[in-house]
Length: 44
Length: 330
Image (cartoon, rainbow over all chains, first blue to last red; front, side, top):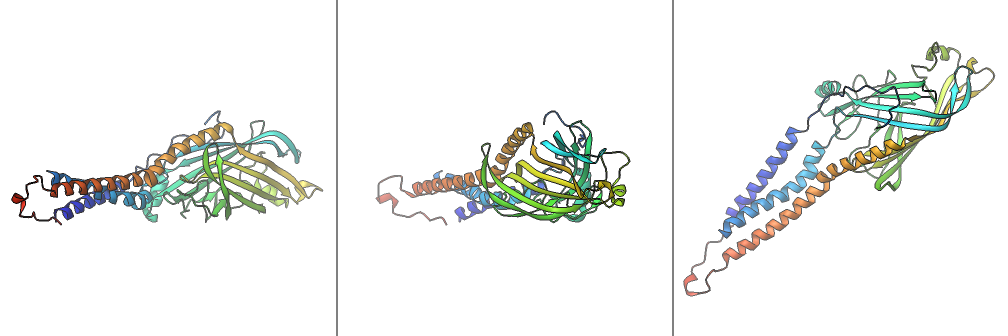
């Protein structure tokens, strides 16, 4: 019984971690202030 | 004590073993996406190209034609579309700016490409356009999906404004990176004249009145790093002609542009380095961590079973005092 509880705890924590990570997602960021180029850049 | 330790190890074993497939099959498709605010530029060159001189209306050989391509993620526009689309969307405002050998503008084609941030499938929303004309893309453009497959894809051609297959032609090594080579041929197609013409006073409408039409064909080649889906190199064998009409006098056609367009060397190095660093991040989620966690889970389980077995073994060899068996845990 204790082994079952331990396994269930491990599974629940893994589930919680993955669900939290995916719910948080990644930030969208901001639109770059740099313009669309109309000159040839010297380097990348 | 050993029994407690074995239970903790068992919990950790299940934690890592469960995390492995969840990371690969649940978290990765939801977390891997193109950032909405990404900005990138690219320089391509066609050396010894043929270019139309609009003053004489004759084709001439030029040393070099340069194409500056910028893609700028529009975060505000993507957030607006996400509200109705119900998924993560990226809006790229792009500009293909073509410069002649004298540094003067040859053509400028703006476009807006809207796509799913995770799958790179096109998303249809108001504002999707090429050179100010609304379009409906049915295929990818600029970038392949993460974990690109060895198969043909549908690719949007912004000049002809059609979606056509781009064929997988094999796996190659490009500067130490394993890449999939794709090729698309767009046959001679009657295409629109750019809204912005290189000579003042000439407009697409004034050219159309003369009965002259613009035709275009290209062979598009991409070398795509399959883990990130990012092209590390691209080439185009591009030809444009003006055909018919009074503008050409007694000629049937004149070459407007012909050249073998290739990425500039410094941009190739930059792209290869960038893709290599991004590749590691994707591999972390699709391979390194899932396999590492699975292995770790197995090791922890083995250790837990070992400790459990040790805890059940009688500590003292005297048989007389260990007559009563311990209750067995489930």
